Image (cartoon, rainbow, N blue to C red; front, side, top):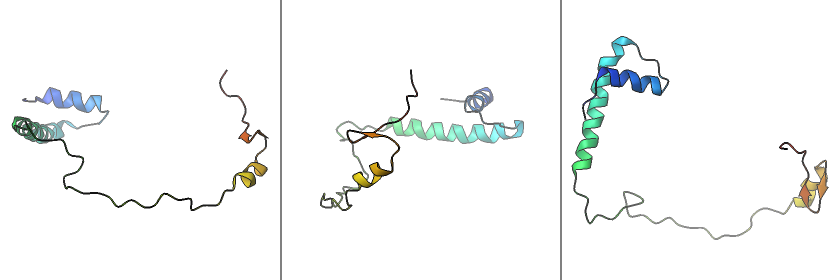
Length: 95
């Protein structure tokens, strides 16, 4: 895919990026290089290659799932302006 200077200006406009006229040509070259790299990657045959979650075959160590904090529910509700049946009451904001 070949890009034009008009394409670069349009992309800058859509991205809400201010680009000076003298920056258009270098940006065009950079974006063309990126698009060329994408085309090369799309040309690679990936049939039979399973998708990977990570580039290396890693497994993370998992810690034991246990409670480490004290239950302070009652203390926090004591500070709340309004509580009912263990729930915090807040003013209605949507009608």
